[in-house]
Image 1 (cartoon, rainbow, N blue to C red):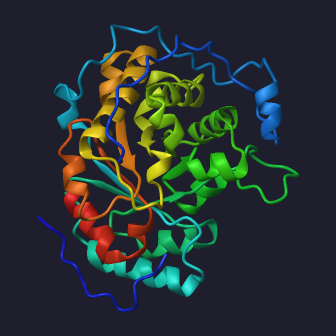
Image 2: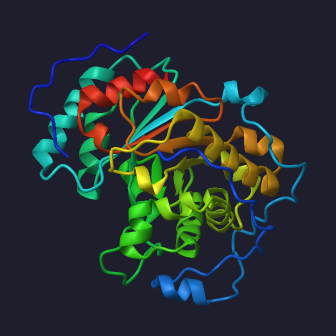
Length: 330
């Protein structure tokens, strides 16, 4: 049943190319678990280190996934997440948006078909947890640091965001990769620190640039990002991980992959997951689409069997549009 939309009490916050054949995925990469380091360059240069978690992926089972869907696709609960990025500018604005979301969702999420998460900036996390209590909307952090405690000025540990009431951490967003130089090795270290926190889930972002897409490298790029990002992570932890496929060329540009393009990309994600973890595990993992998702585009995306929700950017900054996207995904 669609959610009841309330009028906004304040002004709304402001904030493809044809599908081509994918290049073959490279052979499986050697499994390695880089040690945690405060500098991303060290993480790439260090070549050894014992993983304290000792989560070695199981041997690959079966062949590649030829087509999406499968019996378990209907059992994957969609997840719609709003990434606020560095918005809004002030706590009162953030509180207003949270209040509007709370009014739209309160008492309507007990039997929700979709899981709903918002990722506000760090200073607004406590307010989000407080205001959204009882709505069914979960709260996540947009990033965490590489350390758990100590003399690391400016860093935030997974245990800290979990203690605030956060259920998720987002890792590997393309803006973190390109603007802040985060590597697959750093993302992998952060991911395993998050998994060490009971009850804390991860949204792992992967995706290709426009140049890589036009060169038919989509499958190769996401294959490497997934293998390195999940290195040392066992199948038992996959239930706590959501993969967000976000074509970099569609983020904040107004461009959006067609439903068919998204489906092909999500099958490529499952191909890699199957090669590493086996068919059953690959079919159980939820894969979101992220990249200029709107209320108008969500239903077409969700009609595809391997699209399990959306990672929403700009449209998550108004309660009306975000609620409509959740409705379209449910």
